[in-house]
Length: 256
Image 1: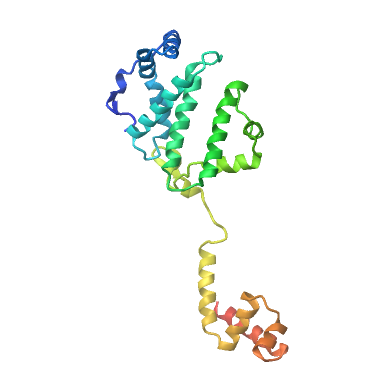
Image 2 (image 1 turned 180 degrees about the vertical axis):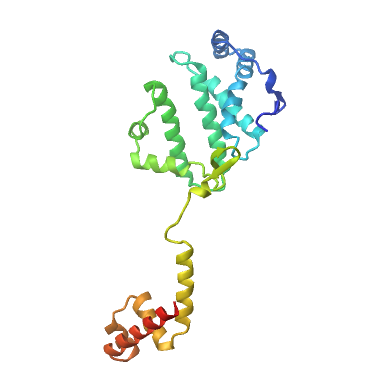
C-alpha cells in the first residue's frame, strides 16, 4: 500500500521536488501573504510527507489517512517556519510532520492515557523540537524539564505513557523469510510448564486430604498463622497441629 503510485488522489510518481533556492523564494513570498506561493511550497514538499509516513508502514494504518495527517504537519511547518533561523526548511518540517502523525496515532490508540499526562507529553515534545534547533543536538530530559518548568521524572513518565505499544507479532529480525517476532523473545521463568503442572498436582493432592488437614494447611500456608494460633482457632493442642500438618505434607509428597 505504501508503495502505490496514488495516495489521496495524488500521483506520488509525479511529485515535484523543489531546490533550496526555490524553497527560500516561495517561503519569502508566502510570509508576505502570497497564497499561491504557499500552495506551491506545500505541493513541492509532499515528497517529504511521503518519506516520513514510510516509517509507519508496519502499524496497519491506512496510508491515505497518514498522508493527510502528515500534510497538516507540513502546513504547520510552512506557516510557522522562521526564516531568521539558520536551519533548512526540511530540517524543521520533518519533526513537525512526524509529531503530527504520532499525535494522530496516539489519539486513536486503544490504550488511553489521561488528558493531563498527554498534554504534558505534547508540551515536552514541543520543547524538545525547539531545543533540538537551538542546541543543534538532542536535548536531555533535564533540559526539556527545565524548559517547561516540570520535574524530570514527570517528563519521563509522560513521554513513556504515550509511547506506541507494539504487537507481540511485530517482527524484530528477518532472514531468508524466517522471522523472529517479539513473542519469541519473551519468557517467564516463574510460570513455565513445570510450575503449572506442579500447581495442578498440589491442588489435586490437597483435595484428597481430610477436612481438618486441609484447614490446617490453609491457615498455616495461606493465612500465615503460627501453629499456636491454628491450635487456638481449631481447638486442639499445638502438638496435634504439628503432627497433623506433618502428616498432611507427607501425604501430598507421596501424591506428587
